[in-house]
Image: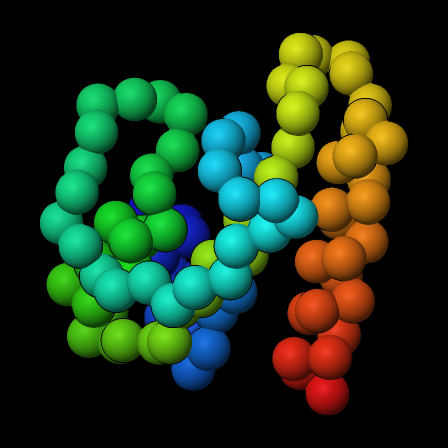
Length: 99
């Protein structure tokens, strides 16, 4: 719920997350609000947070997802060399996109 309040304060939101499967080095896409809730204590997908933002606060910011491909997800693991390279490429893309 606090993420929906935070989203409501901006016109444009970029959510950065790790990607366990899929395209490397990263995926950048616009997302749409969707009423897709799962019963978990971990997190809501960005689409669900955008939906709550619209439903609860009447705000509809542009929301984008920057999902960076990772490879090892064990607690205490650092970035693998491939994941670090993906992060660097995503960061370069992001800097170019916002400038």
